[in-house]
Length: 420
Ligand code: FES
Ligand SMILES: [Fe+2]
Image 1 (cartoon, rainbow, N blue to C red):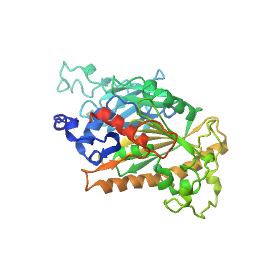
Image 2: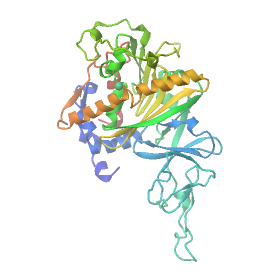
Image 3: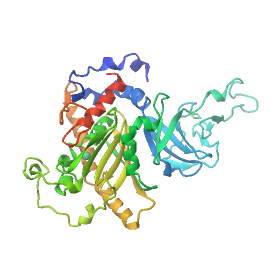
Image 4: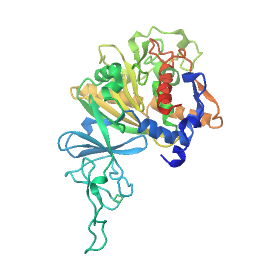
């Protein structure tokens, strides 16, 4: 963090309204100093961030590059079969070392910085400095320069069901304690087999990262903004569903049981945009699904603080990773998952349904647009607040989705970590 920012405590930047979690100062979506504090207190703070899938780096030397907040990260499989996460920033001048999304290094001493060729091993140890002894006895590094005092920053790494998480902080509890039993059980339920990657894409969003986090936890909007969902009865508030969360209200699951939809006059009344129509699908196989889970849940969106989402929409299973890209931009990286034991037909269904949901489909395109609508809408009025009172004022789990309890839960943890 810059000295200018560090000189001014976060709590002096913002006065949180006395109504608490039901109000959010719009300033938090548009302020450079707040953004810088978030990098320190949230992304480099006591939180676990999703880094990728174990299956992406099956063999020693396989690596992927990713981000935790703004920090670039290399995730590499070691010769012993472990996983290391290293900050992808050379200790010499700060250049990115690995600049490709993924790759393989054959030898253990082989992360070579492109700028002056300093070389690191898979533990992040600085092994070699080009021209360390100079040329013909001239130049080179000082005699007493100690390479062992300069190394890549290494994150703590833990995995659950093939998902890899990393944290900068020694204070973060072990991953399973951080998630809590409700979240652990749901991850183990959703990822019920040996994952295989079916596809990947990224969606660049023109809004602050927190607007997407709110959106993923907001079970009030899907049947309204995503008219497709309600028109074809994929996700209506009249179907059985609800929200679950961990004890501290840091992480949330919103879920629906599609086949319990008893119908609701509200959707047929013309009072809401997602009204009854004569529309039908020419190819209904787009929304065919097989009942994959004993709990009969057909849609579930699980949000792990700060920026990870595990999705099940019909049989489309996937991870979404939110990467901060500045005050008013973020990137959403999607990885679509199937399982080793899937039949060819099941794989085909998963891929087809994923096209419905992804950014070129009908759902995420709308989420991307709406985040930008909010970012545009708040611009001239940063002294104002958002009002979040649907379903009451608390943060507990609820047996309905006509609630913003999970959004309030996000602001609860945000305020805890940011000290506001
Ligand atoms: S910046 Fe990496 S070797 Fe110089
Ligand atoms: Fe949405």
